[in-house]
Length: 478
Ligand code: UDX
Image (cartoon, rainbow, N blue to C red; front, side, top):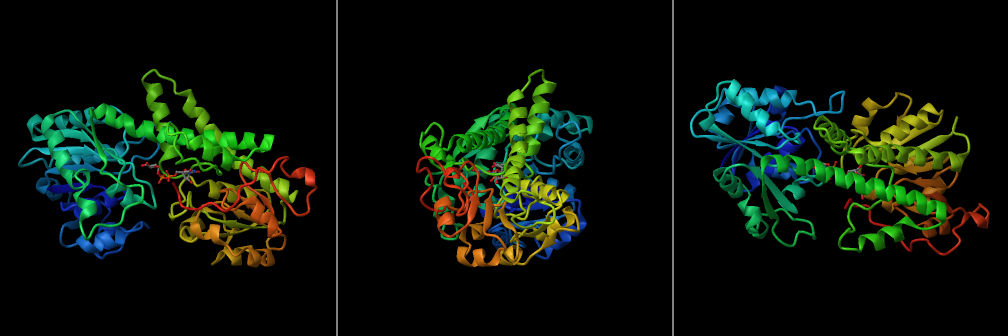
């Protein structure tokens, strides 16, 4: 099929490359000419595994980049809108870019009827606004249909998430639109794509083709909000339980393993930490709350989820103070600046908030992140310095702080680290190590939801019963 995708941002680019991989002809458009010129030279604006391979495989064949929205829409059978929907001051999604795209599309509706698909995360009623704006701009009712096809991809694993999804949600209000949308995803739902010799590898968990779930457009719009809100709630719940674990001397890792073994709950998205961040959860939660309020419903639960998440950074900062007493003049090594491992994205990153707070409290922070340092340099005060490797950051530091779950941070040479630090103190906001191991290696080690261990603290500081985990956990995100 011929597809036009409006918006060469995160979602738009990944969707464009993946639809080309599924055999469709795709034109991805953006009004940022520099971005288009770079893409046409094979330069990608984001760091995402497998995206360079897919763009190289299909660019100039089934995948094109252009700043000419009109001709892309004219040639397309399906037009995806994947422009940004940032947060406005009142928490609602700012849909002005989205509306701008709809207006432009309205003037390019020629030839066969087009299916206009919302791919960006948008509030309920957006599909009705699309219809209204198109009509106001003079588009014939017979020249378009509107569908919603929310995207659930995660940064860092976006390509694999697109090609090996758990489910595909299509909100459409006519049988014809459903048919066309079904056809678009047929290589995935039939299982043909994963069997192809050239298919990109999927996660081990992708054993059967994804479910295709057809809903009304309004339900599809709400599914995206509800999914993200539920996941954020799961994390805030786990972080709250982690704090109780610490107070009573239990171990959150053991608790989560057993709680997650209940198939009604599930083991994924159960890693305690310093709180969620990124461009989706914080923004989507606020937008969902604002949307509900605007329709007379209070989602107070979501306010609490966000409050717990903010507080989790304070929980971590308290651990740093507990371990070091005063912070003024102390040298701290911060490992990780991105909002999670595997990405260079620092938007709403709890690591960045923590580094800023430590700096404000007078500590000297030396940070290292395998991918996010260029972006972080622009966001952090000039006094923060950056090292080229984890051990360089740790050199002479009073303590090492682990803020992001990059795999390399879970595989540090602990003997070398102990020799490099001024004091062997590690405060781990992602539970990448076992307290037993850290204690055996001579570290004072604090983590989330587990007792602090230290070779020089009194025995009463250790948990009453043997509640420590036997080995380090993998760093990969669930
Ligand atoms: C999320 C949703 O997962 C995705 O479906 C949606 O389309 C966009 O938002 P993303 O923002 O890329 O994706 O990140 P995700 O991997 O979901 O992690 C979100 C945050 O939660 C990160 O800060 C991460 O560190 C944190 N997290 C995640 C945990 O603290 N523990 C976990 O077990 C999982």
